[in-house]
Image (cartoon, rainbow, N blue to C red; front, side, top):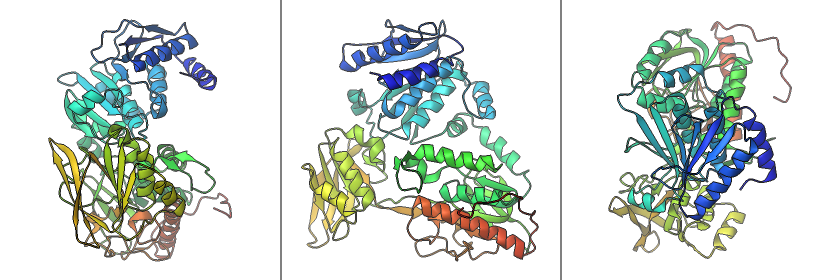
Length: 536
């Protein structure tokens, strides 16, 4: 199961164990169980004095294994062979169960430990090994199970437990159940999970936020544009704050990044973590888990601009940079919302394995849609790709690859009009041929929507100038129609929505905000006496 390089790395990690741990397997006679036995045996052999293995587990779901401190009953289990994206989840579970301290804010750790639920919290996370969003959820709830004896968690690979996937109609991952009921769907961080189980947390956080003094620059949004704006502002020696639902923005939902200059290849979550670390390096005050609700312009020249949050808190800045990004565009046809996560999906990497051998459609003929169809064709039984225009818009090399695949059908001039279902899940897609007007029905089990982005600017309507597409109108310095308010990234009219463009846009907006303060007598400290490379 483990090659020599991985064994060497894992051996080094296991030296950090502070308390002995035990792996307790509950196996059946399946091939996965045999692989699980091999994996557990190899791990235990890497550090026999601190890791032991047993194969007499009595868990109801087999094959699975529990990770616990020796002599204890810690609530971490994997009903999976945690390789691929989940190998890191396995390593962290081993270390944390063995007493190695997690790299998590102390306030969050204390909050987990202080939870006293009325009944034990029993989580189940359904995931796939190809899902790049799943590890964050698995790792967060595993940590909760380490810290609080009232919490238990099982991470389940939907590809292994196909019958249960069918019975429970699980068609999107990560999908989390709490005490048998659906708790959440999609990527979540520890703070988000805690906010749902600790109902008083949001009110406590809001009260503290409203006491903060106005920032010199307040940035709304934590994606590449927001992160770059934060770094450039902080390097000017001015008090900089970021408020965001989650730091990283769309990059958290991006599998591979191969076109960010000087970074040959990375993964979205890793890139997002680097963005946050860079901002934190300059002392940027980062506020997470908060969504902006209203922008209140300065009442008089020189007065702060206010940002009201959905939690009831209020933050303000002498200048504000809006970097709220964009989200997946929806089809807006009957059945899309009804069958969301019940066959309608937006992440082929995450949810594709749940449709193994089945029929699916991909809506969209751009790079994202064609790449999704190519990936899915290696997993599912058949892919039908629908493009509204008269030709596929993806790069020629991708189109050629797609057309070479035997289990793919392509339809251009195709307008999706409805997604239908039966028994609570998708069973067909209806589209109209825009040339002939003929309506066609395609029987299938899944629909993957890949038709672009829509800016997160609804909360700004009526406050500043927006384009007919809802994008924030900006000038060459990133300034909006409101004095002291700047904007950057995918939420703006800047063409070509790319990570590298958003980052440059954020830097430009920060410099524009600093220039505004200098030229409009808005008090700001002198720049930090620190040389900046000419190429920055």
